Amino acid sequence: MIFTVAIDGPAAAGKGTIGRAVAARFGFSHLDTGLLYRAVGAKGGDPVAAAEGLEPSDLARDDLRSLEAGQAASRVAVIPQVRAALVEFQRRFARAEGGAVLDGRDIGTVICPEAEVKLYVTASAEVRAHRRWLEVGGDEAVVLAEVRERDARDMGRADAPLRAAADAFVMDTSVLSVDKAVARAIELVEQKLGERA
Ligand code: CDP
Image (cartoon, rainbow, N blue to C red; front, side, top):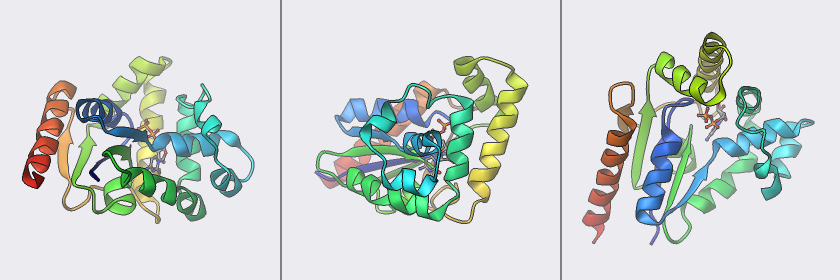
């Protein structure tokens, strides 16, 4: 069975939590596509060469979750040749047999416009920064500034900017708890699977 769940949205909106829960519930594989851009940014040197030569071991580095790695990721993510080098891998993952969940910024709009279920998960910048701060610590005001800067770069870039696909189901996790968002996402997938059966 080919079935793709595309989850897009800004930093720390809850995409990863929802993605992992949906994948576990249905036995789908899960790809955090942000990790690809984080790994390219962390490699240093020419970002296009880094993207073209990306290897599984690059994704296993333990420093990819830092604020710095997030900033480096969003800087290399504006480069069209970097994005182009990562498209095929993501498309193949999305349409592989067995079902897949991908979370990122452009999954429902560019990588897999044919995804069976599209979610756009968002929340206020303050709520997202608070969540990220609980994970990384440090100065919360710095984390908020980092979140805002990355949002502006991700939404403002010319190639594959962050935006909700016209047919995406929008969830605001400032008002909806992450548990409720997970439950809603599971319902949407069940409904789509039911329509197919
Ligand atoms: O975990 P968090 O939401 O903070 O970020 P991430 O999903 O790991 O993504 C890091 C950065 O990679 C983003 O700010 C984007 O600039 C870029 N990215 C992208 O351009 N396209 C994707 N599909 C995923 C991430």
